Length: 511
Ligand code: KIV
Ligand code: ZN
Image (tube, rainbow, N blue to C red; front, side):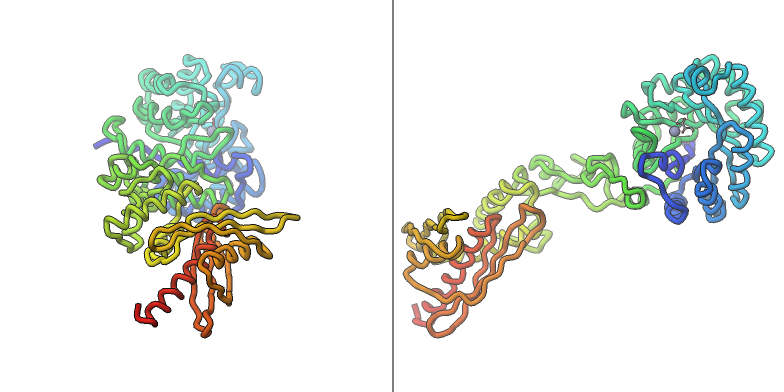
């Protein structure tokens, strides 16, 4: 059996320190409940001395969370902070006080203005004070990543002796390379007496984009608790992200001798919840929970995942509660992906027809970044309309604007393959195009109704035109056309109605 790694979630404390991420008590309670559902071991609920609002949130979470998770509150190495944290945690079934101070030369000399001995004394005093309130006390050696390792060993030994149950070795500034960070854990495990009886925590920040890698290396080297946040939100570049750490441990457990008790099915839900509450969006390419984490755009990749999902996916989206694998249809998509998506929409085309559909798809895809299902439906119905066409549109060109007279040049092809071009002007560009069509088909119809709507999404959406024309005896025929260009869509719709009218007249006359 691999080692159980405790997941300490600090979304509500370090995560909330992200600019703009502040949450009210109600919102924090919602996130805390999701964290419990997911199975986190420790919830760092806040920093009670920092504001009355934070005190209230910690107290509310302490009361709301059952004994499934530890509820933790942060303090500085200051007596009133510790007493206030204890007060806020009074209702918790499993309270923990997280206290500590900076241990690196810059923290000692610039921020705290203390000697190493004074720092060590304060550390011991605050652990003892916290232990008077609760049995579970975590000590953090802030900026341990840039501390002198000899001093780190000394202070960790002192707090373990003073009764700390958890020792946290944060790389506060995300400075260390993963292997250097891991080496600090290996060294502490070797040199601190009694360290095997405490939980050894890693806490990493993403300033060099290595927070998750460093956390994993710390685990490999002996850490038994990972501190992280949902979506990796946190100070500056953020903390290590919970979903990345959990999935990396899940996929490489034996290599790092580790497992967690997190239910991965909750990862996507938690990510969306935190994003919607904080207003901090998840980058589309974010590992595990990004919108594109299971989206495939290139034809080669799409073909691969259709044959076997794991060709290009190491995580089954269902395992992290994500939507199923998504094939993004673009100009790079191949026949396989298009055929697959049409089949999902319930449309199957014979081989000969499919090639034409694919060409029509490429034309749309060349003009749009992404082709949506609505586009595909429009392409399919456009195709069905063109199959029965007597007149087909080959080209339409418009010249219009203020103060020009709208003029259209239209080229049509008849069923025998003959091409005819006509020019006309009109009251507007669509009227001009219709006049040019009338000039070619040598018929004139009354236009009954005309409407344009956006058939798909986005500014590059397909426009869909629906119109009705009536023949001399008052019979009405509907025409539809779609295209990114509304003049083209309008001309196609007009021709579609004319073709229907001509077909009906032929049927009536027994042709
Ligand atoms: O990054 C850090 O050092 C911290 C401590 C307060 C634990 O967040
Ligand atoms: Zn931090």
